[in-house]
Amino acid sequence: MDGTTALDSVLQQAHVVQVGSVGGFGVDGEIRVDLSDPVESARLRTAMAVESLPGFHCMCRGDVRFEVFDRDGGRLAVVLLHHGATLRWGQWESDAVLADGRLLLAWLDGHGMPGPLQQYRAARLRAEEGAEEERNWLAAMPAGLEGSVDRILDLSRTGGAASPELLAELTDQLQRTLPDPVERALALLDWYGSGSGRCSGFPVHEGVPGELLGRVPIADLLAGLADPRAEERHDAGALRHLVGWKSRPHQKRDVALLPEPLRARLLAHARRSGDSDKQARAEQWLGVLPV
View (tube, rainbow, N blue to C red):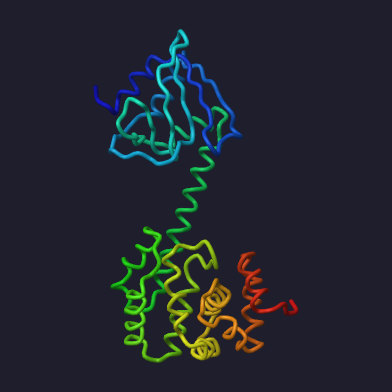
């Protein structure tokens, strides 16, 4: 029997399916659905149709547990749904990819278990937002660094920090491409002000321009922020850098050198951002000024 159709053969014999939450879906409780109605049975079978068995196992416990019983109450199968996309069943050597996981999520939603569909939609939204942030971040990357894109993005996939060798290469390339220190500072501030814009919990690769800014003399940063070309996006990068965690070798001393108008400007930017973490850091580092 084809492994992708094996579960469907079992579901054809099913009389009842009992569905329960695993992990974070406890608020949904349990549901029990009578499958003696051919229409209801067909809906579930279509929703649980398998596309492939690619040979991988998800590392989590799963989100939803399906227990399938025959007419006499005998348990035919226990199947776990993972992330609205794959199924795990003891008769398979690997997890199975659903033909259309959204059908099964919609089936659950229609039977009183909305949690999995809600989480799936939230995860999709986060993924789309993350992709948009990455595109914006890449668009702001200073010219001349394109050859290092893959190495930089890989930092978020591996979770590793940028190596001293990579940072040295990027610094040398920036100095060749942008020999003027003020233009170089503006380019890095623009880059660091892009992407998620967060001061914590951001993708690892977004920290690279912050590391490079840490090597820029504070006088060059101040000259860049005083330059007529400095805009909101440069303020965003400066704020993120100056109030970040140990972002400069002499961070406290450097922040103390900020002129009062610039300090007020950056603090106002933080208050407008709607980011409570960023605002709290700005209040701590830049001082409480009149709103």
